[in-house]
Structure formats: C-alpha cells, structure tokens
Length: 63
Image (cartoon, rainbow, N blue to C red; front, side):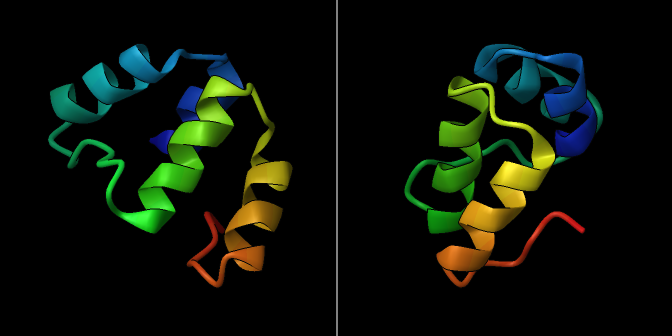
C-alpha cells in the first residue's frame, strides 16, 4: 500500500488515511522504519530512493 501511495504521489495525510481505510497500521514516527518512510513521503522520494534509505538504516526494505 505504501509503494502504491508513493507511486501516486500521495501526501503523508493521504497515505495515513489510505492505510487506515484498508485495515493497515498507520505510520508511527517513533518507529525508525516508519520515520524513514514518513520522511520519504514528505520529500516525494521514489521507492528506489526510499529502499536505499531503509537499507542504509538497517531496516527492512519495501521489496
């Protein structure tokens, strides 16, 4: 769902709403992985750049 939101260019608020509407947990800024994802969404990164950032922070990548 997060990859889809990034691909669509959704804002953080839209992403949170879509996650909630589709029965997924929303992103929580105190979780490091979620914080990286939230930053990437705010900065309009593509999924590949997000994956690089997750990998560099030793977090599970999107795919």
